[in-house]
Image (cartoon, rainbow, N blue to C red; front, side, top):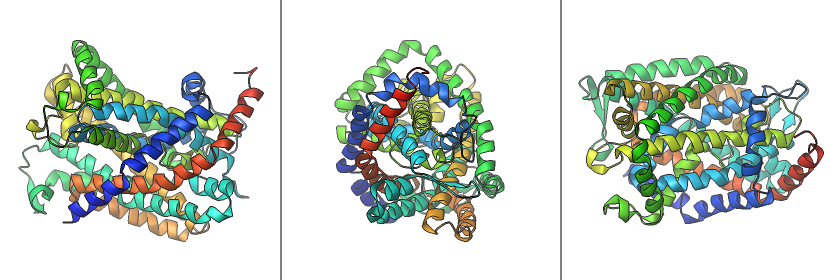
Length: 474
């Protein structure tokens, strides 16, 4: 009954109006910035690895990006893509890419506004994000909307995208690899489709991740950024290398996969074989929803990290922030999706869900023994999801700091609640977990998208001013 109720709420939140609103915002910002994600992507990638020497902030520009990527490159890239294709067919990947393309302009605007309207106190502590560009950019009369975002962000971190989905993905991957037959079962929770079998692997891995997360989370943004700067690039390179190898080894199957993806976006029944529930609406809804979950464009999370960057140029940081969507979805999610479509891992008759779909794809597409492919994917998923736990703790803490007026007492209490949520995450069902995450994602996106549309003129003005000033240097 609880699961059915959550699905009903999810369908209301992620209905056609919100999907249209998010895509329309990306299209509008793309127009206002002159197709910036195409013409200035090269500069953005260059700025990504070149920090400003005289910038102001708490972490380097690259550190801020890695903190944002630590929160975005996670289960959304591995489990989220699989779930989207399983529910909406191969066409869901097409809509995920469309959302990501326009989402790059959205992410750019978020990073720009975060730096433009951020607050820096006498001690050099930086706080910024949608709550500040709503309050300062739109005016005090909209402070209620800023508080709504902060509340949704705090809850999203605690109950959705930051904790439960990530630890659930980690333990599920470990379970699939180490004990696929669940021979080490300890007890069972729920019944029917909501049944969860808890094994020794689930308990041990869950405890280890909880302890490691606690050790980093308690150290704050500096420790999170340092850990992210090491883990994120390393694991992203390994995952991309595996993805490239899969595509090279299965190059003859790529045209057929692309056909399924494109045709499936507009005529799902042609490639889904009459599978119940696979419709154009399902493909769009799941593709956009999982795309937003994966790259967080329009969600309002990344600008919280961008605000802490050591920079004095809002446009420059906006460009750096934009690369997060390019890396996360255009590169990583595309590789995951192609692997799943090429191997047919999404087909219902296989009886797979979540991480199991992507693990199957890697096992059958990589030129290694099945156990090696499964191990590599499990390793990537575990590290990606772990860094997402860290990144979202930072986001949620900053939201709570805004709500508490800068008081750190509530933040310290929240950290322990956050760690507790990580601890209980493995004991919830996959469907319920992703549904809760989707709901909070949608609720966060609404106030943020409203602000981005209202401040699009500011974004266009700042963009033009920057490129006019820097024309001779760029």
